[in-house]
Amino acid sequence: MKLSQLLRVIGARCPQDPDITAITCDSREVSPGALFAALPGSRADGRAYISDALDRGAAAVVCTRSRSEEPLPQGVPGAAVDDPRAALALLAAEFYGRPADGLTLIAVTGTKGKTTTAHMLREILTAAGYKTGMIGTLGAYIGRQKLSDSPNTTPEPIALHRTLRQMAGAGCTHVVLEASSQAMKLKRLHGLTFAAGLFLNLSPDHIGPHEHTGFDEYRACKAALFRQCRLAAGNGDDPAWPIMAAQLPPRAPALTYGFGPEADVRALAAEPDPDRPLSMRLAVDGTSPYHIPLPGEFNAADALAAIALSRALGLNDGAVRAGLAHTSVPGRAQRYPAPAPYRVVIDYAHNGASFDAILSALRAHRPRRIITVFGAGGDRPKMRRADMASAAARWADYAVLTTDNPRSEPAEAICADISAALGGFPHETVLDRRAAIFRALDLAQPGDVVALLGKGHERYIEENGVRRPFSEEAVLDEYFSVQRCLSV
Image (cartoon, rainbow, N blue to C red):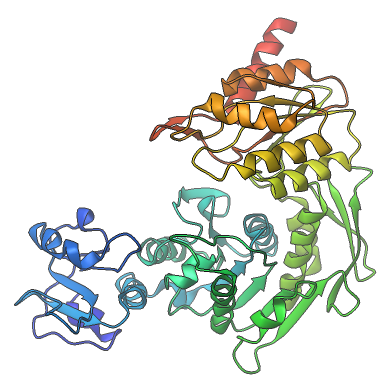
């Protein structure tokens, strides 16, 4: 692709017009013929790496306009712009042939529940007959086939548009995308138009160095998404929804959902399903209840959001019911099919609030006991350890403390902090996570629930800068395989 074609989308010109063979914002990934986008960062300015990119064969550079110095070296093709992040989003879309133009894009945003709700919408759209892509925390998928992992909930523009091109090429018509506040702040979704946007909830999060300066900025970044949406559904029970809705384009339809009487799509009841283990039954607007194969009111709330957006899009209710009934999310209240008289659940919960949510949800199903296996991440606020201990003591019956991602801290010290916070609550420490899971399963009796918390979808344990492979599902497979052998 000619440089002139790319620069046209950002309103720039250049007397030279080389062929551009790739596009990147990482100088280490530059190959001959690439366009290098030098982005400003929280830790470094991309302009410092222009010379490195040129040494590696970059054919052109886009960078920040500077008032104090010449932004580009003499004779280097490219352009200096006021907002290189917004420019990169437009350049990436153009380079990959504007794949979003032929796709129905659906964005899901909120502090909690994005991943589960995106999976629900993916299943509903699939049940409605649409080939659907999904992009989010757990990676990129076409249907249920995983394409790639992602280091971010919402990928950077180059990876995003490359993935959309793959999805369009595979015949996808719809794509469900988790939209993070950081994605909006860093212009990763700049230039895209969403057929629909879904707002779940808002609470203080992602505030601190390298993220958001405060709650006001966090909320504003969430709200900015809705300027790019043709219609929206929002949680009418959340006080932030009017702020989100106010950003919609003029005359864009907006539908509310919730448990309050003013909601357009109103939930009348959400309760444990007496006929299905660890599942919820959701009654909406007097219709026959929807079956949600996940425990907890928070999962029912996500389902209500998916139902509302599906109605806003005019999807058939039969597809909505079928899609919800088949929803499962790796590492999110994930039920492992244990060949045992007790149940095993894997969940990503890694702070006090998420511990409260999953453990109270499990308690609502009246298990004989809840045995939980957990640790805490190192190099994170120590208050989290006390919060998790408090939630475990409130809802569980026994805890096996173990390694999570200790990072640069000793796992023994992390577990000691949790143990001190648990006080007299029944617990023990088994630092090896595989052995800790085996111990909890050995303790389990008929009617119990064993809850493995903290790792969820992760397939590693991070310690001293190294991620070693670790899969809780593989450990469970191993345990029950051994048990079967012993029973023969």
